[in-house]
Length: 482
Image (tube, rainbow, N blue to C red; front, side, top):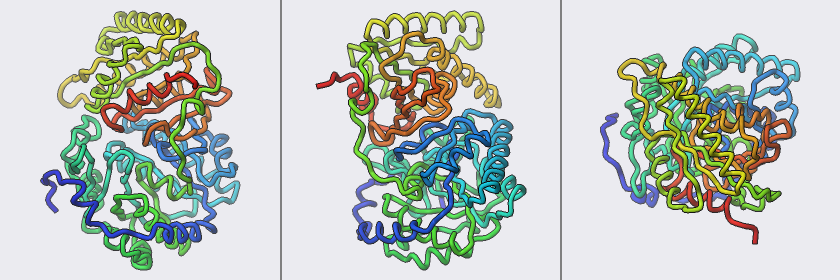
């Protein structure tokens, strides 16, 4: 299982796959889901995980009160935003221990069974396996539930993330590139080398879990509708070993989910580390057309929109350069490297806020973006860099906190940025996911308790979309009613 591979042409893979009767699959999934009575709790390590769903609640805290509200909703699924990708390891472990304890307590009081999905990045970055390991240990300690295995399913079609022959790929234009050979694998905090998901789990767990002990659900079995065989594979999983699910389309996830539901009904318990596609399928969320401006902006204020760009991945910078072609938008570069000089940093924040107030109030849309060069403190200082990045994010968040003018909408680019703006800047406790404005780009409608109630808040992942997608999104929001 050699990780050193070359990119492959996506059409060469997709065109060879046998077709599946999707109507039959939908019927089988609907039948299997009908008597599935577990509450589905999705822990989202940044706000982008709702990028496939609509009509679903997102809670921005994990108090027993909020978790109980989620359990009591009619919807089978709710999200808790942890934002743990912006945490250091000790913080994410403490948070997940607390979340798991509260889930177990509420479930016991309500006598309601549940499953937990740890929604992580589709390019495999994040605190893995720390988060699911902490959830497992705490839930098993606080309840009678024991976990047999962990399902890994990072497939995310909207973002071009596919798992084929157990190797996870990122699509770049017409080609599929093994994830371990992309810029995402070079992440200074969450980096990795392996693209084969069994080997990746072995690498990330420091050999605690072996690739050879992993169960692999192949595309061949999925496309041949070998549901009994897949169910049998799941029934044989023990010792919290991993299950890798191959998938290139939603129908693959649906077929796997039919077998999964059968295994759960037979008494098996799994934790899940997944991207956003699996949550849509197991949560029974229907397809919905992309959102229009009329759906998002109910009252015209005459004020401009606010776009905040924090992510530093290559795709974000390319999208920002494309957005700069819009002559009607004002652009402000926030010198985030001044974080090393506190007084100058505070003065820079004040300058940016004053400019934003002037532009928004005059009806002009404004984009604030952090310097495109990463802050590099040198070798073995990754946690210090992460803490400084949080301080920068706090400063960007303070722009929203201190605004006196209500923007007509807000777009936040990047996971940590969008989480902090939602929870700290907009002070959201509970939001409703309206849907997607572009594939993989979700929109929250903020709750009554927020700084700007009912505002359309566009959460734009750093690594999603084509070069033109950010510009096209803003053009939709800036277009006038007909």
